[in-house]
Image (cartoon, rainbow, N blue to C red; front, side):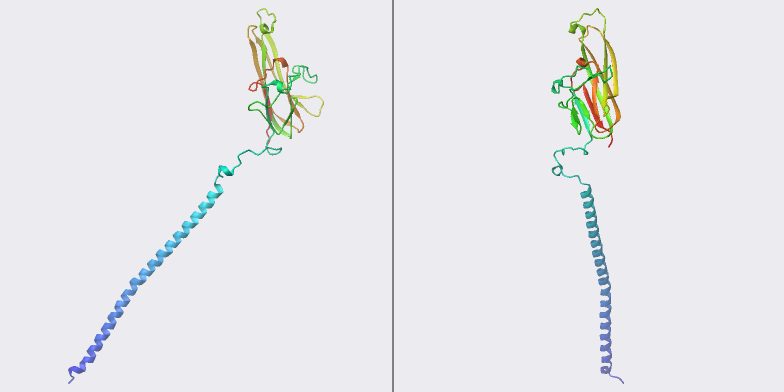
Length: 257
């Protein structure tokens, strides 16, 4: 018959095994949340790193785009326009008759190789008035010289101002005074005789009690010109031409690029 002392080792061994199993269960239960926490931390870290990388990439791309399209600061831009030279600026000119004394009087002697209705070249054009200019072209004795071959737009306006017969000291019989006003634009080439490009005509009748008889003739056109051609204006009545920069002018500019 077994005694109580014989059963004691078995009971103690069972208690030890039970305690050991319990510890293993506790440890196994603790590993699961730890693994989950580690996975979550790694996921957060990887997501954060990806966002930082994307933000840096976007910032770099934005900076490159802005630097390519940014307008230079005013201090970096040239304050003055570079001096133009042939080939960099289209030839152009706008000349006026603001003061005819600057380049000599209008010629009163007719030029015989011109059309009989406008044989008096206007020689007193200048570029000293406000708004007038002379770029990459030369002016000599009222003639504009073409520097480069191409298409040019030519224009001219002459302001005629006749004093009435009363102011001239003449006699009149209550009738009207009639004047023929002609303006022409010519091209002088290597040929001896100038070629007429434009012609404007106006026949005006004014009452003798009119203080001044006023009229202007304007014309313009596009022409194919060669380097070395010279352009000038002639009129029918040189003494009636009124020198004023906003009323009597002559110009040209190259139309080709």
